[in-house]
Amino acid sequence: MVELGRALRARGYDFVTVTPETHARVLEREARPARDLRDVFGWSRPFAEDLLPDELLRLARAANVIRRDAGLFRSEVRFSSLGPHLYVHSAFPTLALDSVFFGPDTYRFAAFVARSLGPCRCLVDVGCGAGAGGLSAAAFARRVVLADISPRALRLAAVNAALAGIEAELVESDVLAAVSGPVDAVIANPPYLRDSASRVYRDGGGRYGEGLSLRILRESLARLEPGGRIALYTGTAIVGGQDRFRELAQKLCRDAGASFDYTELDPDVFGGELAERAYAEVERIAAVGVVAVLPG
Ligand SMILES: C[S@@+](CC[C@H](N)C(=O)[O-])C[C@H]1O[C@@H](n2cnc3c(N)ncnc32)[C@H](O)[C@@H]1O
Image 1 (cartoon, protein in one colour):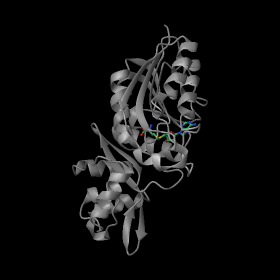
Image 2: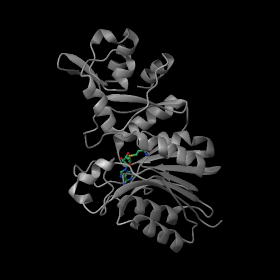
Image 3: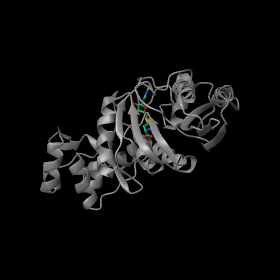
């Protein structure tokens, strides 16, 4: 898979992953087989075998990522660009329970982390998915740990670390439970929605999906070294103008003696979710960033 990524990069491949709604619209506009590499490894369109150059077909077969689909073939992975690197993640649509996420939130998360972190000894990306957050912030840290509860995410994160030429430890972990040693920086873009299909990359638990974000904040504050920092990117359901997540997150930081900086990064994400019964009272979902720093 690493070789496949390298070969794509050598051919100048790049692709920006859009929301599932935009992706579906682009495909619906013109139902057709792939015409180029971006169609195959970005848009997840079906392709005829002779479309791929021999080298790429061989590498894709060796990586076991292509499947037959109604007389054509289809890639089970996508490759997306972020900064100088390519990241492999699950193909569209991400219906499987263990799909490996990468999307517009990943771009916002990486930008938020880049302006919220400083030099640190050990950086842990909790719920790393394909690893883009931790890998794009790797220059800040001496030790980089990519942690996720999903073995499949960790397999792809390992490929992405190798593709980026970055040394990172891969740890299968429920939040920080299996991460060893002192930690002075935690970053996370966890699931923050109520997902009726209970997909692990999407379902945050709690009333509106805030459960895991609050848990990450609480457990990180308890675990971080003095002077340690958490940069949490997440979503919050706004009900009647009130942001309950903000109140709870602020209380956790106050109780731990940590500073609390809260920024609304996008006032309206995942608007389609508001049609779900669980969100009947919710007026919008905002993407937010929390930065908390413990006293040194
Ligand atoms: C929305 S995805 C984000 C992935 C990545 N951080 C990004 O920005 O692209 C959330 C990730 O959190 C992981 N996750 C869910 N519950 C977790 C838990 N209890 N501990 C660690 N990781 C978890 C999922 O497997 C998934 O990879």
